[in-house]
Length: 231
Image (tube, rainbow, N blue to C red; front, side, top):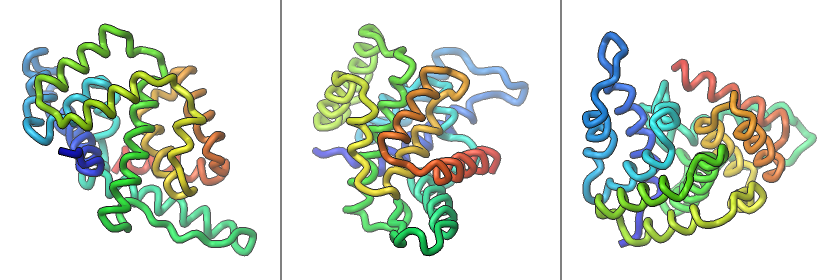
């Protein structure tokens, strides 16, 4: 059975919110076992993939995805963020640039949203690898988690292929077939990476360059991330 990329993005954002909710009023995290059950126990059957990707990203990264306004709409909110940033940039261009209809994840039919969601998933996995932290031991752990949770074979094959290929921002950028999709991909990466980490920041900037993302558009998308996290 094929996996649903858009649903997987929704699950991933939701998992981040769940992890945020697993902290007590005094800010202390629960036991490791409780955290593990919170992270993966909800993703049985068709939802197993969310837990596997959460393991790939790590707790800190997953919490970034689930915070603020993102927790209230998942992939659709990512699309709305891209729409706002893109239309603001587009309006600033005036007559200097032909208008491109912003067909973002919140404004396209399911068939089109599925293709865009897969592009976003590709970039999320790439961003998770940007600091080089996924070694063979961690990869085996991820594969074991996917196996244990019974994720669809197509997802297992897809994730295995993504983890196996060299981390190449130019190859990842090729998944963006428009500036609108590039905006969504950049936003997803921006939400995952740690900007204080030089390697991750360099990866993000190189990805934006390879996608041909206008510097002003990039700035406006950055503003959307700040607003979403505080929302």
